[in-house]
Image (tube, rainbow, N blue to C red; front, side):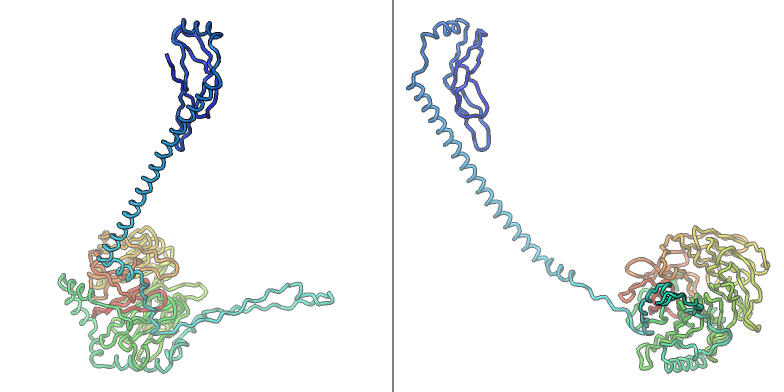
Length: 591
């Protein structure tokens, strides 16, 4: 029997193989082994001329006859080696030809794949060119020119930075070159207040013009105002202001009127001519004069400036129509035109003063002045009657003023909160009730008839999650209370009976975190409507949001020229005009 033995990877060599025969005996035989190495694989090797006995008898006979069987002759060995080499040569030729054919096949396949890939790229490019995607991509990749901030109105004044003061050693100042100590010099430090308080008493508007305002333009501006207030139509409006306003409120009531108003507001646009810088710094308050003969917007700034903008005179030969006055020394947080005497405007400031500007006489009279040493700030005010006001203060008190009395002291001061107040609002029908918003997170409803000097108890307490920025009664009936707080909520309360029960009507989730550098939001009612109010927004693109009396958003005012957050907004009482103020002193008028 002939057995075949395989070895792993080697070269032609002679070895002694130990094999087991059929009889179980081990037989040692010298064998010639050939190993072929392929390029990519390792082949097993066959042992040539390996005839092994299969029975015990054969094994014994082979051992007995070993002496008889001689070793292979030299010629036999040479012929065997030649045979092995021929077989190896044939196998190598077969493998090399197979490898070459395999490489040729791979190259053909690679070439076909490359041709197919290039064809797909060309087909895709042709398809996209038919769709016009490349042209559209180029159009979209072009940078869009953003409108530049309006340069209309007050010009920005850049302060020249003083060079840094060189530090010097105290030792060099007290010892001379000889080493003798010099006598100490008295050091006098004079602290100059950057924004000093405006002198008490009446101020002439012509003398309070901001330094960067044209004096000639201010004179023309005051002349236009006097002519406007002296007209017959305006006089009739002033004398019968409440009756005419009541008729207007009745005419604007109902769903049909709201739909019409919504449609008209959706058509309003903001143009470049209707954006102007009214005050040099951040706007803290804004309002629109109720007259229809001219569009007059007033804004209170950060350092006591009050700017007026005659919008329809913007771009005329008389200038941009913007005039600014310095009537306070700190932020002007509230300004209002008088409900009946439209030639008067009231303003209060963080410097603790409340003034009345009379455009007819050109005098800004001081109505109330909080003690300067107590550092009491005035937040806002509201009218109890044509001649009495109620003012909210930073010490948690409210002050009741009467403009007919002499002096700058309050008639009464009542403590209502332990922390600083943010706003106060008087009920339009039952004026003995007023609402206060506080930094302690509470809105309280009070009865003025029950107020005492020291301890007072509110009729209603409406808790909020965080500090409350504002709380305003609805302007016509006072049946709703609108609050804005830093817990990202704008709430509507039902105040049909404020002395008995006040219920939450709607709580709207609204981002009210304007940050440190922006004026805080204060949602504001339309002056003559119960079903419309406005609020600033932090959304992008920048926008102003309008809501109805149920708290549903009905319109959003957007424009390419509205590129910043308008924290404060104000409606015109009888016309569909909205003015918004941002934190750089610019006013945007939608009309």
